[in-house]
Image 1 (cartoon, rainbow, N blue to C red):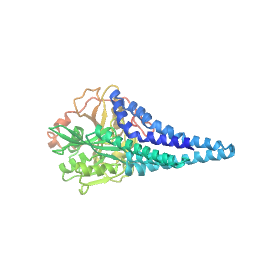
Image 2: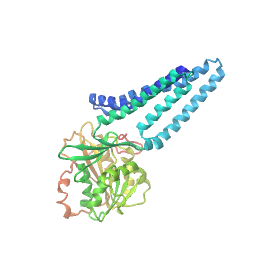
Image 3: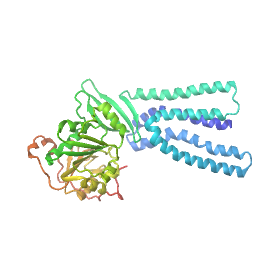
Image 4: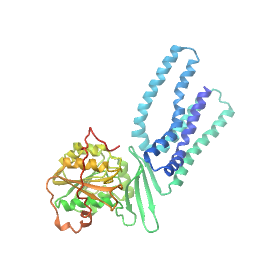
Length: 421
């Protein structure tokens, strides 16, 4: 039993090192490579692999201890019992972690609790608990707690720009404060991608692509109702409500923690009567909504890792059905126009052409065609109801239309989605 106790204690030790490795190893790997997939695989394997391997040895070792009694029938029952309990634990743990523990406690607290539980198990099953052993275990417990705390300190020291670190059911969310003596931005980062940012002095949106959503005001002069899929920090809905005093906007944002942070850190007024928020998956909302909109804005794609369920023919057909006559869907896509990273826009352009009556494409910056950049894809339902008086207001945006663009790719469907995560 003492060897089993040592194994569990060893698992507690390497679990307590996770917060330290999280900062030190990830930082080292990011300096060695810019391939996020490679970094994610290697760091995950190293950070979680060792404690997982050690803890995984506990079950077979416990069965082996039972085998020492030379009662093979009893060993079989024990093995089956351990296996079934392990399976049940895995299922319960998956749902408990995703829906209860992570959003309410956070990953760092869960690691600390796991470390303490493993320590207590190791202490309980040890055979002879004399004074020397108890004193040694107290010292070890202090070391384990110290390692956890040092991991937190190391992270904060390595990331001085992070002012809030929040775990939700879906993501890890960081609120950052970045800039210099001339300009300062408040940023919402979700996992590895920047979702929203504003100028702290003026509260203006920092992401230029968001201003292209205003094209609805030019192409449909009677547009009064808008749906936005993907709220994040709600920088555009806040801007929209301030600019268009007689229009309404609904937002479908799956993560209610983002909404809370948008209120706290980005000035979102959830009591505005012209704003309605649905904490619901965007595709699910499109599937079942009975609402009709003049404009639908899609801003749920995190770089090249797009949720495929919003890219498909079926999803866009539902979006078109949720539009009023002369309505339009405007989507921000991160892709290149040509080259190795052209797949996203090529597939989506083909799919938009299959669904909508007319399609336009705009580039946000002057980036080269083979460079990854923000591209604005617009699908129209029916005829355009152009507000010619607004031409000069949006002249700069309209001048960035990409003409003569074409795609020879297949359309994306629920059964064939070569893009996304």
